[in-house]
Every structure is written in C-alpha cells, then in structure tokens.
Length: 358
Image: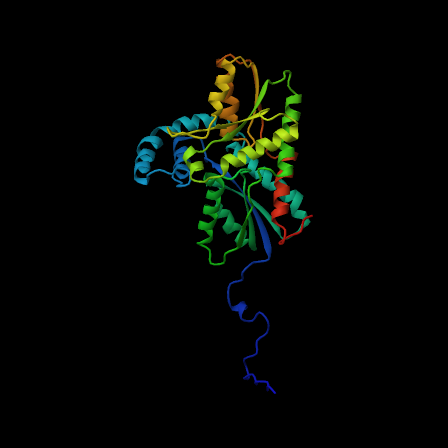
C-alpha cells in the first residue's frame, strides 16, 4: 500500500501564491477583430506615399521579381502615383471626420456589432483594424490581448477569398502573434460567397435600390475587384468564388443566367487580369446601344475608392461619354441593417464552441 510522503515544513502555499509574485495576466475574454483593406491617413503626398508603399510592398499583392519591383515602386510609382491617388481620395473623403469612408464605415460596423452581439455574452470584445494603414492589425491584436482576450476571432472583410486580400490579413495577424509572449488562440472566419444572409442582403439591396429609380436598367453588372490572371492560374480560387456569388444572386433574384453579369475592375499594370473588365464592358455596352445600366459591387462590404470614385465616378463617365444615358451605382451594404445581418451571421457561426449566441 502506498504511503503518503510528508511535506516539509514551510513548503505549503495557498492557491495563487506563486503567480502573485509575477505581473498579473488578464484572460478569459474573447475578441472579435474585423479587418478591411485600408485607407491613407490623409490625402497629402506623404500620407498617400506611406499607404501605397505599404500596400504595394506586400508580396501577396505584387508577385513579381523583388529587385525589379523595388526599383519600379520606389523610383517610378511612388514619385508620381501619390499625387494622382490623393486627388481621387479627395473626391470621396469624409471631411467632417477627416478620414476615408472605409475607416468611417468599418468603425461603425464594429460599434454596431458590439451593440447587438456584445450584450449576449459579457466576455466578447469587438474591435476593427486596417490591413494597410491605421489602426494596424498588430496594434489591435495587442490591445485585445491586453484587454484579457485569450481567444480572438479574426474576420477578414472579404466575401470571396483571394490570397491578395484574405490571406494577407492572416499574414499580418500571424506576424503580430510572433511578437507576443502570451499568444491568444486565433480563429479565422472563412469567406462567405454563398452565405444565405449575404445573398439575401445583396439581392434585397438590388431590388430595393432599383425600385427607387425613375428608369428600368437594361442590364445590371456585378463588378468585383480583379486579380492578375496569373494568380488564378497558380491556384487562387477567387474567380470561382465570384462566380458562386453571382450564380446564387441570379437564383435568388429569379433572373436567368447572365441576368446579373460578372465583370472585374481595378486592374493595375500591364499584365492580363481577370476578364471581362468592368470599364471595357461598360464602354462596349454603351456603344452597342444600351442606354440604361446599373452596377453593384458585391465583393466590397463597404464603400471605398474603388466603388465611389471608380464605379460611381469613372465608369459612369465612360458610359455617358459613349452614348449611355442612365447610369446607377448600387451602394455597398456598409453598416446597413442588411449588412450587419451578414456580419452577425458569420460571427455567430464562427464563434460556436467558444460562445453560443443562438
């Protein structure tokens, strides 16, 4: 029979006595961090240059020879592009808050998530970040960890996966974790190209918006941000995920295949990108005799330069210049009731096992 081993006098310590000798470590809370692409801190040359340099230095965004790209970026692009893009941002800038609309909307989305989901479990902490620019992913992960979050749900705000968007958010988060001694457990929300709440919200926004017009569009384009064709050839699933979204929207709207037509915007450089291109399609439609056109951008959860300036501005001008008469841009979901239902559905699903929100 085993005998109890006597404990030497003076070695018995009360619970917590050992840890009391060290700095306290907060834990027990669960963070939800939503992350969008980014925005410059201002429209001036140096603010734009800092933002563009960070964005265009990302190896997932630009996959070319690094030595050649360093020269092109630092000697050619960053000497001219900041001025031009700064002027573009001026046209959409939130003058009241002195910030880009993407920052305004993402903050509002985080605040509303906190208001609707936060009361369901007092362990939840909601925050937001920008992949490029401020507030950075690293700064907000550290803030959540210091607030006692030992688990974090990371939500890249991209309904369709692409290495240059979703994956680079994860890269930033993992880089931040490498610098922390006490690493929170990280869970990443997957994209949601066919999420029922998302399809319903986008379809409803199309129906609701078109009902307010004094004309009936002959065609509606679904314009997604493009990627170089080479990236898809290497295995990026982005084109297929965009097709899934458009197919689901056509089915929900009861439109025939092609009723909502898929195009790709925002190409950069001389390489071939995913086609058909939005701007070329808009031009061709106008020249072919289409007089009334509407465009929606389902791949963006918040309005930004690519939707407000490029689609609502540049593409509207292209359409009118080539013979079109009525052009309408359907806004992103932003922090609307439908938009928030989408984010809530994704977060509720991905928090299961940590928090049961119903």
